[in-house]
Image (cartoon, rainbow, N blue to C red; front, side, top):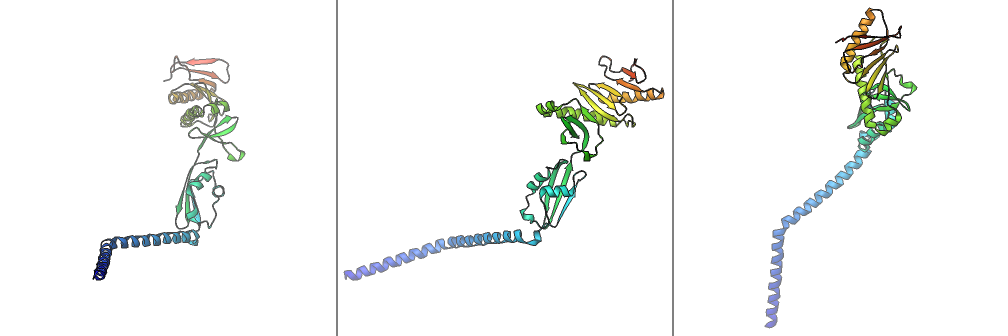
Amino acid sequence: MAFGRSKNRRRQDTAQRNEAVKSVVRSQGPGVMKVLVLTLATGLLVWGGVASRAWALSSPQFGLAAVSFSGLQRSSRVELLRLAALTKGQNLWTLDAGALERAMLQHPWVKRVEVTRRFPNRVSVAVTEHVPEAMAVLGELYVLDEEGEPFKRVTPGDGLDLPLVTGVDREGYVADPAAARERFRKALEVARAYAQQSPGKAERLSEVRLEARDVTLVAASGQEVRLGEGDSEVKLQRLARVRRELGARGLAAEIIHLDNRARPGWVAVKLSNSASERSGGSMQ
């Protein structure tokens, strides 16, 4: 009888364990299935992504077929393509736009560049070039852009006919580039204001001479216009009136002084055919 009771107990224990397992399966089964499904789906996505990437990197559909440029004036398409090592057939997915931009910025005339991939097979390049406004002697002759930045050495092929800015040497530029660029910018502002007066061929600006805080303009004829410091636009308007008056009298000036600090409205003129200076009253 003891044997029978032990056997029945084992059956009961087995039944209880089975029921416990069934209970766990009923309660946890849906969650387990979700995990399995998510794991399978993730695996399929990863596999699909790897397969898609491999296809994209090898498909001729994404082979570079054309490169378009905008903003080119002094830099050329051929030069920029060579710097960036862009060739037909390169896969667009493998192209690093940032690396291409850095490579093209090595061209001396390129100030800014933006490279955009145009899928499936094109690249566009927007170039902003330096605008040459003057030249400066910094050991060698350099081109100044509109911001007073000496961005490249002058070469024979540049074909530039620009005024020269003097008074800042290489040592001064190296010692304080920011201060030198600020002086260059002020010189360029005066040069632009002078150009707005529409000077004739003989009066065309040849040099902007920086002397401490003073500015002197030298025309193509060799005529010097000493502006001094400040009020450049007012002084240039006065200069135009002086030149008209001299022209009406048939006279030519070697030096025109507009730098009288004590009496800003006064003008002193040294005539080219006389060593004397003539001082006039206010010409405001």
